[in-house]
Length: 346
Image 1 (spheres, rainbow, N blue to C red):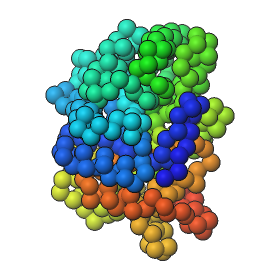
Image 2 (cartoon, rainbow, N blue to C red):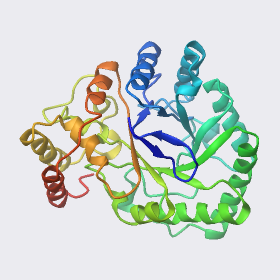
Image 3 (cartoon, rainbow, N blue to C red):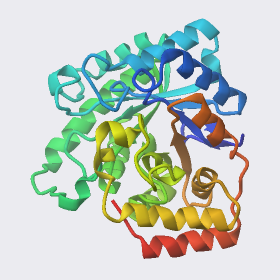
Image 4 (cartoon, helix red, strand yellow):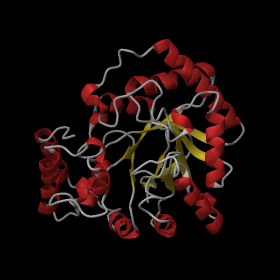
């Protein structure tokens, strides 16, 4: 599999990243370990986890379990060097981590060292902040987004605190690179500016939602990414399963939608029609819609690496079968037309 630069870090990663957010909830440990082996055999050397995982649902008693599963695989296989490992610190939350407290310069070291213990490793290749402390428009909050209560001075002071701790952790060899998640163009550029000002680690990536059905990244964030050489780690590239086609005729038992009811606000009156437009394109061109959705990400005009997850090895096998698919100009043009007909369906 092709290798791409992780921003300006000097680290190279595979152009696809294995997501692990169901490890410990829908995905049992033996299946998770098989997935780690399968992805590695397919040429993927980049995996993404988080302090809060597993999800669906997130529970205080399971926070950290995904990292533990990965750590057990590392210990059992002895293949720590085979993967570049990314993980994330949870921001302010309903109470399942640190009684709801997010991260700051005072507690970030403890959060990082907790992940290191669970992962059974001495270094995290990419450490990310899962969502901003100041508030943000992600997770479908853009429909009523109101940043008017934000305080720039307070935000910048918080960034300096966090960057100071990250700088020390990089110097100690516990973190190699720094990234963001669920961030905005303003937030990303401020993190970059403050890092330059105090000598902290520079942002190399931002992990935001991006798929055929979710294209907020295409404007200001894309401009930022090109000019600042920030890699998009695109999560939910299959739109939480919509782009597989499995929800077109109902809700399969045991699926994410069956478990949580609305896919975090993605179930809307327009999403089925929008999804069908892309399924029809795939059918016309003899493509598996899963392969089309992932291959389309390679056509984007900014640095990008999709993060895909699989509940089980059968799903992962289907995904990996399309890793060499390249889309024709005709397919891309039809996708562009469908996007104009069905913008932002959730």
